[in-house]
Structure formats: structure tokens, C-alpha cells
Length: 282
Image (cartoon, rainbow, N blue to C red; front, side, top):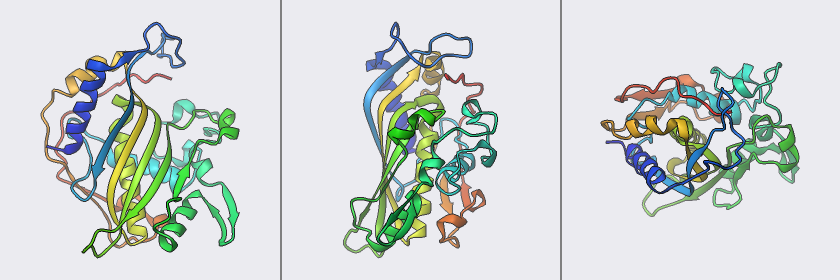
């Protein structure tokens, strides 16, 4: 069985059994019919995935890995905040008439600053530092810029990525690890989607700088299940579990900016039926 399945089931069961509810409280999200979207939630949920052991894709249902990769490329490679540069419709609800989601996500990654070594945006600085000072404890990206929040159509959920390099005795290559900080997460709609996205990002960055992708530590401040998602989650976590798929990148690509979704190879992905028509709170 996939280790991602085991962690997902444990997390969901803990939220359902021991979480607190926002029922009766004032909440921002609404369902399409205007009803307040309440949640059951846990505070401070963490999960750890070791990419050297297996790729953390759920098998309870299929995660669309190439679409997940496309969104991560949209943010960190294309550095875009316009849905016309994205090959899916997941951001349509938050885009204006021009396709912009405001000064969010890719816009923040692409903001440049001048350093003694030259001018860098956030992603370029990560790649530079990993190549030149890999054991620095300052290698990160941050999308939560207070001064720009009022111009974002949605505040960033997964907002901070911290890169950390380790080297175990006997290993030929350095190991690149990642901490993903997330202020809020809709567990049914987004949990494994985000996990797989940032696992792929970790793999791409590691390959670009000649390292091995190691651990992904996922920290969620507010891990929640929406009220209308509870029956779906309860059915999902009772499904059969399968071994994790094999997921790898085209080894010929060593430039972060050259990766495309065609370079993601997914093999032996056995999974349960897809969950369709998930209501999304806006």
C-alpha cells in the first residue's frame, strides 16, 4: 500500500474523530447556493514523505499528476498569475476578465531584487544558492507578501517553501529536502494534489542542481474537511489501497526552466475510482 494512503487515512480519521467545528461561527467561504461553508478542522497537522522510498501519490483515488505538475510550473517556472498560461481550469473562479488572479502566486515568485551577486527573482535565487552555497539555511521562497495581499484574488494557501540540504556518509550526491508551509488546506480537494505538486517541484529542483530528492515535510496550520465533504471522505478512506506508483523525471533535463509535463513519467499507477463533482467553497 502507498505510504501516502496510510498518512492520508490517519489524518482524515483524526480530523473526523477529534477535530473542532466552525459550525455556528462566522466564516468567509460560501457554497454556490450562498450557504456558509463550515468545516471540521485540526490545527498544526504535519506529514513527512521520503521520495527516496516512494512517490507520495494516493491510490485511494487518482491524483492527476501531470496537471499538478503543470500548475507548479505555472507558478515557479512560468511565474504567471494569469489562467491563460495554465492548462487547466482550477483557477477560473478566482480570475478576473483578463485572466489575472492579481498579485498572487507566480507574480510573487517573479519579483526581482538586486544582490551583490546580481539581480534575481525568488526561484532564480533558490537555484543559484543551491549551486553555490547549498548548506545555507536561507534558501526559500515566500508568496505571502503583506503589502500585496489586498491585490490578490485569493491569499496564497501553500505560501512558503524552505529548501535544506543534507549529506549522509557514503552518499555520492547531496540530498535536497523541502518544507512546505501551508496556512490552510481543503483536505478533500487539495491535500494530495499539493503533496504531489511539491514532491515534483522538489524532484525538478534537485535534478537541476545535481542532487537527490529527499524528504518533503508538509506543515498545515488549518487542515479542514468541509461539511459537505464529510460523507465523501468517510467513503474514500475505507477504500482498498494499492502500492505507490513509480514516478520519475526525464534524466536528460538538467535545466529547471526546460522541464515540461512530457518529462514526467508515471508507471504502474493503480488506484480507485475518481471522486467526481466535488463541491468547492469559494
